[in-house]
Amino acid sequence: MDANIDLKQENELLKAEISALSARIAEMELLIKFYEDQLLLSKKRQFGSSSEQSPDQLRLENFFNEAEEQVEPALPEPTYEEVTYKRRKRVGKREEDLSGLPVERIDYELSEEERACPECGGLMCDIGVTIRDEIEIIPARVVHKEHAVHAYGCKKCGRSGEYTPIIKTETPAPLISGSLATPSAVAHIAVQKYVNGVPLYRQEKGLGYDNVTLSRQTMANWIVYCAQNYLLAIYNLMKIYLLRETVLHSDETTVQVLHESNRAAQTKSYEWLYLTGVYAEHPIVIYEYKETRSQAHPQEFLKDFKGYLHTDGYQAYHNLPPGITVVGCWFHARRYWYDLYETVPKEKRNGSIAERGLVYINLLFAFDDEFSGLEPSERYKKRLEYSKPVSDEFFAWVGSLRALPKSQLGGAVHYALAQREYLENVYLDGRLDLSNNRAERSIKPFVQGRKQWLFSNTPNGAESSSIFYSIIETAKENNLHPFNYIKYLLETLPSIKTDNLESLLPWSHGLPDCCRVPVKLVKDKLKTYKDKGPLHQALNKLREKFRVPQGVTLE
Image (tube, rainbow, N blue to C red; front, side, top):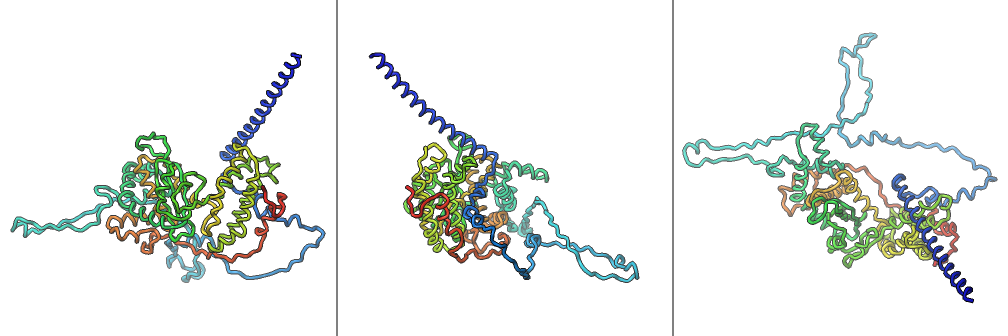
């Protein structure tokens, strides 16, 4: 009897142990799958294309194209008729590319003696010219300028009295007292660093080839002095105008500053970015250097702002002052489904969960692209009519999925559901964007420059870089030539009154023509919306693809 009891207990213990081991094996298999997915994504990011374009089979024009399925081989081939027409010859691309450059013509002519006819000896006349186009690039030229200030005194008064009157010629004030700096020199150094990404040590070396001795420390001092003493006033005024807008974008990225107080040189600091929406009257880009990524920084910067703020999913943007509505980024949500799609074996992608999630979001972007030419009020209505049902069905479907939190699918599901409130805010106003890509593009010049100059030496240098980046990127947004605009500011600001700063802003009509970049004529983007085409039946096609009955809620 006791032996039977012992065997039963042993069997129960073995079953419990087997069950625990089976659960452990299942857990380890999921963990192995997770690490395999991460390894696959890591290899793709390292060696594959950085583009997140959908594969051909997921592009909507192919996904919803049923032409191949409806072909009837038995039908006769259609007949064709020949149509002839005339069209105006297009101006060549070379002529278009050269149209904005000054022309220096060199004529090659023969003398009268050389134009003697070899047959009769008469004078040959000009019967035509063949033009050969070339471009010539003249490198920057460094000139040593001497300002000779003449002084004049009265010899008669000097001989007859104790006081000798002396008069000096009036001269323009130096940009930096006791320095070799000029507006053109500082503008050139700034544009080389902040537009072309050439660090100061490389500029120092390049100038040395032209027998110009100018140390990187001197150039850094010029940059900091001009930013803090001249350009800061323009930067602060641009910030005031930016906060008057009602639609903004924001983003942040890392920057290393070596000599921050009570911080190690390896500690990461942050560059925050704020810029206006696409429908703003004046495009403005503001960079702001801060030591940390704390939510206190956007709270302080945006304390006087009221309106919509496009961001990514960073939590710091979800505790902003009242009156700010955060708009999420659908492109960030799409990235999770794209990464999940990349981890699915190619033979299993068709009809997969990853494909379905990706197609839903692709469809939203396809609709938004079609609505891009509409006025904001019309865009708002069309989004509610076509895009909102798609996102509603997407979230209903995502809510029905069951996935482990640490899996690739779990990450995509969690992000979509956690960010739903902010993602759906795009339907509140027709001026809003489906993604925060506008901020991503605007912060890219800083990221590309950082790869070259690597770090800032001091907080003053980081703040000065923020000022220069803000003014240069805003100038580019307003179709200004960065070098000419910075040079004009540094020529004007030392002698201008504070009340007249408005005339120096990048969108001011008072700027000289040399600051402006010729802009080619662009046709009006507004177009008439037509309720036709495959996109407007795309949701039904999507349901057919994944066998979703019409009107069924995916809970």
